Length: 247
Image (cartoon, rainbow, N blue to C red; front, side, top):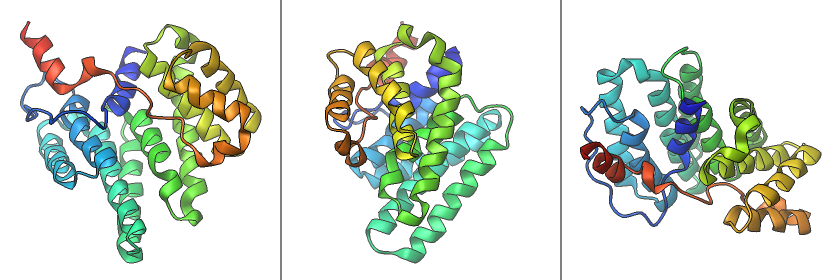
């Protein structure tokens, strides 16, 4: 359970308005690979900062050599970066580049899924990447991406659903939002409504509640809006983790 919560934190921790992160100390094994790469990954995802995305990809390649026991997690992060590049190619009307990149991303996620260890973040990274980018993919692959998002959020729900009320805001918010949105996008309207109701009761006075209330009062808006990535967890940021380790 603790590993799964840490994995989810790894995907949702970074705010778009975050300051420049310190240089990740890749040799410091006290830090998880998630902590070492996620902020640069999200600088790409959420800010379009391709320099930091490239830095993350290079660091992932280094970590794949230095921490082979974390191969599944690292391959998933790498596949997420590759999918983002594919999405950018699609939006730039570069179909051949999109096709190559998207296929590489799917292969990366598939390779990660085959590994039986070093995969505590796999469901969160895989589900979160799909939820972030599925609506920006070509229509012909969008449904499959949302189906994979639903499958991976369901894994997280199976791990954490029983004690969801006791989890920190960002954990329960992202799991509930991911379940609600992926259920809605895959035609499971009744199931989605159940998660929306839980968001309204468990996430009062938050951005999650505001979006959930909009979905409930205006169901037509659900197809065009996003519930996820509404909260971050500053304690998990690289700078804060480094400061905590020095105490």
